[in-house]
Image (tube, rainbow, N blue to C red; front, top):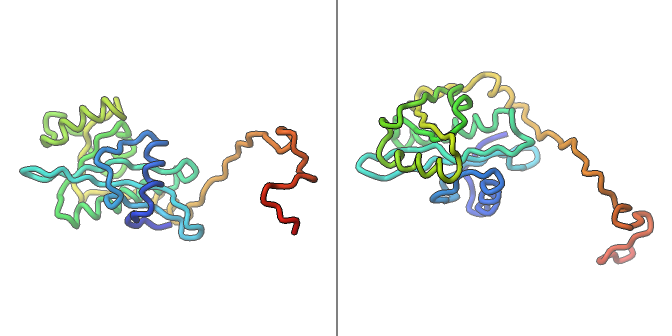
Amino acid sequence: MYVRDAKNREEVWLLEQIESMELDDTAFRSRDYVVAIDENSGTKAGFGRIRVHKGEVDVCELTSIGVLEEWRGQGVGAHVIERLLEYAGDDGFEAVYALTGEVEYLMQFGFRPIEEGRLPAPLADRLEEKREETDPNAVPLRIEVGRFRMPERLREAFKRATARQDDEDDGETAEDFGIDPDSATYKYDTGR
């Protein structure tokens, strides 16, 4: 498993995942995202982005972190966040903000809640927008880039991460649709 920059050709996949997870897609640009990839299968497992709000003083926001259901609980999101914070530090940001209802999840990495009145100007408006559109429980969090801490259990889980198989069987078979699977032919069957 590894985390890399998203590629332009992954834009449709990213948008589909963002929509299915009901995440924020404001000011979407695929080049702002990173993607977690299973190195054995090439399967995409998660993603996230940092959004820079330009102004008198630029502000960096961690947003749209998503992990596919079968990869959750294995450190994928943690490594996506770690990579994004590295990028923020490389870009000269000392702190990164998050506006989310997933407070406990981010606090394990060193994020801390801050008072709404202490948010930089662009994020105060963004918090209200986020509460109205995607996350009514969003609260502001902040981390100094150098204070990020990866729990060892998540680092180890990431090394062994595998997609969990969906145990649910919808129970539908060819016979349910009046098809005899032993004698059925298919539209493009060449008889070979």
